[in-house]
Length: 417
Image (cartoon, rainbow, N blue to C red; front, side):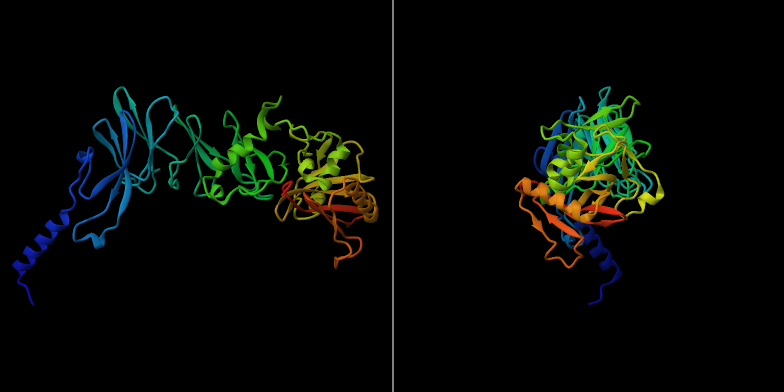
């Protein structure tokens, strides 16, 4: 059937009229709704109200439209943000406020973040420059403080403080060894603590606002966090773990550092501290040996000789030498380095005695503790001088190295796993 031009115009007009129709808003918030919009829930801290809206087209053109969910912000009886995705009350600021993410009417080179609050009995909709890559409204991590992941990976994230509004960009943690997940923030936001993993953190490292790295501070292995927790915001999941183990301390030089929260099992003797790394890692890693951190044992200095850093790929620049002679497993300590194992951080130790002697001393100490020991020497395809020991908290390998012995940490495990 062929329609005349007037008939086509009439049909088009009828279709447009139909498309303008839809379900009429109902309920106490109807005056702020468009057709086909319903309020699923309301968040309110007067004079600010957030309508959490669902829009599901009901007209005949609904096949061309999708269901939408978004938020609308009211100040008293006036709409101040038409469509936020999302909008949330920001608690703990001392006055009502709403933080909003929206792309509507925002150009590609503008931050999509806004803060709505009242000043002098009027609504203020303040644009917050958090970068164009910000996709969310951040996570509250303290009174008046939110953390934002940085989507363009130029920084380790960002902080937003209110009131007054202040933005802080976090420096990135080191790429090698990779310790890049924010875990703690100094009181004045001039230094930050990073960990190597959100699922199973094994080391903490301080990075100041200028991007200078502190000493790696390995910690005892812990069971992996639940999967649901690991998929939540990065810093929110790790903050309780960090706060339970460390506190911020300002040095005499005015720099932020970390101190461990006291534990009754802390080892003080240099020899004992070194040996515990390879006997009972749950106790041994309550110590560290970095020369520049108050959280670590003194008596060590960093080696900056390039050849020391090329011992193995896991060492890089974190090689430590004792200031005074130190013995472990019946031999003199040559050097110690912070390294990487398959499942986290570890220390590796070089001694001046042959591997058979060191392995014998290690075996003797393990048996004295009546630990369950799996000596892999007899079943191993490796040479006789490569002895592997598996204990409840650590697996180590004793092997010939230079004119002495290397005790290499293969893996660490949570105590009582």
